[in-house]
Length: 482
Ligand SMILES: [Zn+2]
Image 1 (spheres, rainbow, N blue to C red):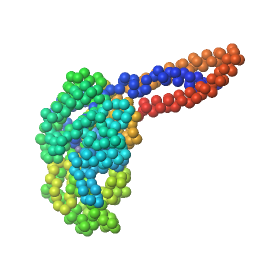
Image 2 (cartoon, protein in one colour):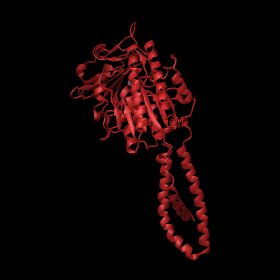
Image 3 (cartoon, rainbow, N blue to C red):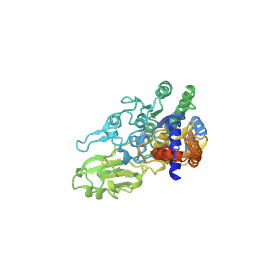
Image 4 (cartoon, rainbow, N blue to C red):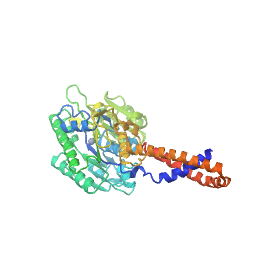
């Protein structure tokens, strides 16, 4: 009996599954715009009037805050948004490219063009989407300029060297391009769009400055402009928007009894024992001691300053996910909030900084979504930004690459999924059809010996189909839960 049931399921399943569109072809997939405002801390809207962000929260979902990966700086954190991987897993470990043999270093902008730095095992969502038949674009987003396994994002714009990241007129031109040309005219499915503020202003004047509050109002006007343009092009019901950031910002401490962290002043430590160093870059740094000098350098630095944390790479706290990549140097340093790490003497004069432990509240970015697949007027619990990638893949109906996030952490912010409903309905139809055909076969078998003999021949044929169908069913379930 069981064999007959399987055979029947195989027969009906094969014929019906051909009529059920795969998840990507149901016509229910909406477009997706991912926007990052660099350095927009989770609470930046709390001391400024932000009518457009408030309206977006009313029309969609606002997370209390999100937790970025460590190291909380621009390129590593943005590549986590694009891949869903922690920094030690995606390998973009710093804003700077460096070579410990030649002592060569490349700053943030030049590093954008070093393909091998970005293309080292984790595919950004643009490439995955394109491989699955979608059209993707990216404007100014970190990682846009690189080639991944021979592929680049299909439509892109990379900022020129010395670009003014705060010009609101340029922001609007960029938005016109993304919404009017890329989404509307060229029918792209996914675009990532990057703005360099309020990071620059936060560094220069500090997160509590009037200049930062003014820039948050510019961001707010921009959010309104994005939504107006989407409306103007008739895309409101077909386009989801995710707005977030890479990290937050905190005030750098100075003056009074404050004691700077300057490595050259630490007793027992000497740069002569170090082959390569990456310091003078905010609150985090890395050292490659010369051969045989690891223990000496480590012991000199460990416990040398009450606000300096010193780890051998393999001893880094597992929760930071920043100890297990070949590019990480043997000694990793990071400072408590308010402190930066200087090498020979203080050379850093920013009033605001980031790069601290990702558990520090000032390092947490904001996160807002609105669109046809999201609930309205919902305040959502915080989550890690590794979870943004599986959410985006789900919204786009594409199979994700291996990643460190999970859809369970964000799925409750979405309205019930049409694709899931369709799959559930199809299973009910298959089940009812199976029962009907099974009863018909039982009737035939009990009324005709010849019919029963023919049915035995069919059974082995249908078993092959049954196995195929069960496999397909599992695939469907997997696809609807990523
Ligand atoms: Zn940044």
